Length: 271
Length: 90
Ligand SMILES: Nc1ncnc2c1ncn2[C@@H]1O[C@H](COP(=O)(O)OP(=O)(O)OP(=O)(O)O)[C@@H](O)[C@H]1O
Ligand SMILES: [Mg+2]
Image 1 (tube, rainbow over the protein chains, first blue to last red):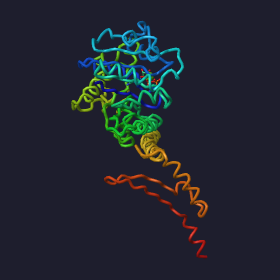
Image 2: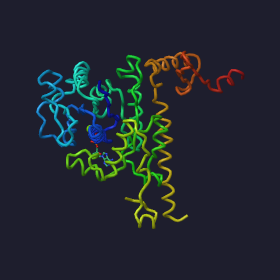
Image 3: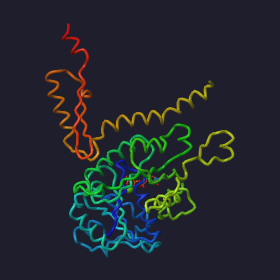
Image 4: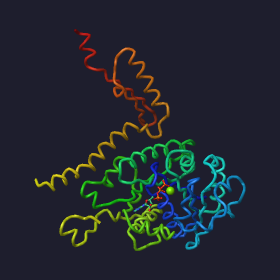
C-alpha cells in the first residue's frame, strides 16, 4: 500500500513543483517505487521541471475519464528506474478533476507504488483541495515572507479538517514544513524571518530548509530535479529532507551564511 | 550613530515586525485546528445577542474550544466595556 504525500502551500510560486520533483526523485533514488502527479490542471509544469515534456501523450484527466489507462499515461523517468510521472492536463478545465476520479487513480497507483507525490496547484480551489484530500503526509512549502507564512497557516488548517483522514476520524495527516528560498545572510541582518520564527508561528515540525540557490534555476533550465545536482546546496538540502522523511536524523545545514573573504572583512554577507 | 548605521538599525527590525504581525493575524484567522466549522458563526450570532443589551466590540467576544482529556470545553468570553457599569452607577 502506498503512502500519499501532498506538496502544498496556498501561495503560488514558492517552490512546490521544485520540491515535488526533487522529493520524488529522492525517494526513487532511495530505492522506492515512486509516482509523482501534477495536479495543476491547465498549467502543467512538472513535466518541464522533470525534463519529460516531449514524452507526454496522455494525462491525468485522460485517465480519470477512461480515455487512457494508467500504463499509457505514466511516463517513466529517463534517469531513475523507480520514478514515474503523471502529467496534468493542459487543456481541460478544472472541473475535470473529481473526488471520485482522483480517488480511483490513486487507488490504482497505490497497488503498484510505495510513494505517490501530489504536486498541488496554488490556492485553495478544487485542484488544491483534491491534491490534499487523500494525503497521508503533507509537505507545506513556505518562503520566509509574510504572505507565504499566512497562506501556509490556512493550508495547515485545511489539512487538519478537510482531508479524508480528518473526515474519517483517522490518525491526522503528518504535516511538516519545508522552508524554501532561505537566505541566512539576510536573516542574520534581520531582514528576513528566521526558520525559528516561521516554525514558532506555524507550530509544525520542520522537515527541511532549502537555501535560495542558483542551482534551482540551472536545474529547471536543464529539466533535471535539483536533487540530482549532488554538489549543490539546494540539492543537498533536498537530499537531507528526503532522508529525514524516511526516518533518518540529520542536522539542518545551510542555516548560516558561508562568508567569503571580502564578506568577512566587511561584514556584508551579501551573496 | 552614523547615517549609514541608522538605516541599518531601521532595517534590522523588519523581520521582527513581520513576526509580530504574523502572530496576530494567524491567531485571529486560525479556526481551532480540527475544531468544528460552526465556531465563527456561533461567535457572530453571540455577538448579535450580546449587542442587544450591551454595546461591545467584535473583539470583546471570544469563542474557544478546548480539549480536556476526553471532554471538550466550549469557552465563551465576553468582555464588557468599563463605561457601561460606570454609567449605570451615575
Ligand atoms: N530554493 C530556491 N532557490 C532559488 N529559486 C527557487 C528556489 N525554489 C524555487 N525557486 C524558483 O521559484 C520559482 C517557482 O518555483 P516552483 O515552480 O517550484 O513554485 P510552485 O510553488 O510550484 O509555483 P506554482 O504555485 O505556480 O505552482 C521558480 O522559478 C523556481 O526556479
Ligand atoms: Mg507548481
